[in-house]
Each structure stands twice: as C-alpha cells, then as structure tokens.
Amino acid sequence: MTESHEYFMKRAISMAEKGMNSNAGGPFGAVIVKKGQIIAEGHNQVTSTNDPTAHAEMVVIRDACKKLNSFQLDECILYTSCEPCPMCLGAIYWARPKEVYFACTKEDAKAINFDDRFIYDELDKEMGERQIAFIQLLRKEVLPVFNAWDTKTDKTKY
Image (cartoon, rainbow, N blue to C red; front, top):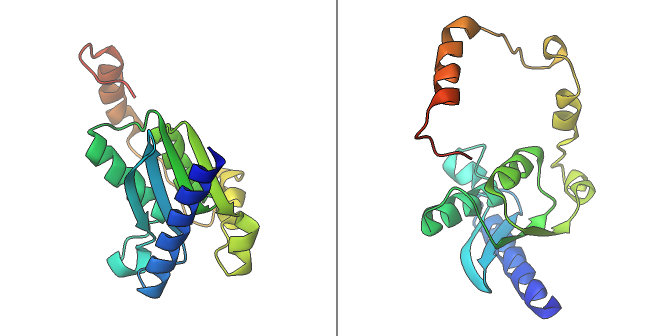
C-alpha cells in the first residue's frame, strides 16, 4: 500500500512541476484517487486563469466531483504537493474524502512566499477588526429563505 501512496504522491508532485513550468501558477499539484484509479489530477492555475480559487486542490476537487457526478468524494484519497491552505482545507472537508496525503508543509510554503498565516489570524479576529470590512446587511429579509430551506422536504442535504 505504501508503494501506491508514493506513486500517487509522485504524480501530484509532477503536476506541481508541470504547472510551475507552464507559468500557470505556483508550484502546487494534486491528484484524487478512487479504488486505486486516478479520477482527477491538476495543478495550480491561479495566474493562468485569473482565478484566486484555482488552487491545485480546488481544481481536482471540481474535476473529480464532475466526473463522479457527486458533490462528495466518498472513498476517495487526495494527494497534494503541499499542506492545504485554509480555503482548500474548507473545500476538502466539504468534499469529504476519506484521506489526504501531503508532501510539503505550510512552513515550506511560507519559505517560498506562500504564507497563509494572515488568513488563520483573520479568522480569530472579531468582524470589525479584520483587514477587509465585513458588513451585515438585510438579515431579516433573508431569514424567510433560510426558514423555507429548513422546512423544505425535497432538499438534497449536504
């Protein structure tokens, strides 16, 4: 089993190198595997697509879910060249793979100027103390929509 984990991690690393060499984005790659088969593979595409959410993990999660026709990655394993950032970590938890393997750490990423510490710090701050203003607006107007969802009998839960 260890050999297959190493094989898939090496594939994620090769995707990181491919993305970096094509100037698609940072040196990050990822692979999603289900039952020993690669379902999706990709690399960071932030700068090539002008999409700040196009991190390698996000790219492969989107692709795998589309291919599997599911919003969850049941029985899947994610291999990524680096410990996921806060955005990718959130997406991973929503997608619910059974395991995640990573190579470099967030400290390794920081060493090459990919430091997400400020996001972790922002999460601990009160809304009014954050670097970007977050202003609540029209809560009462949206509560009926939330209540309708809560009582909706034909919803797909996730």
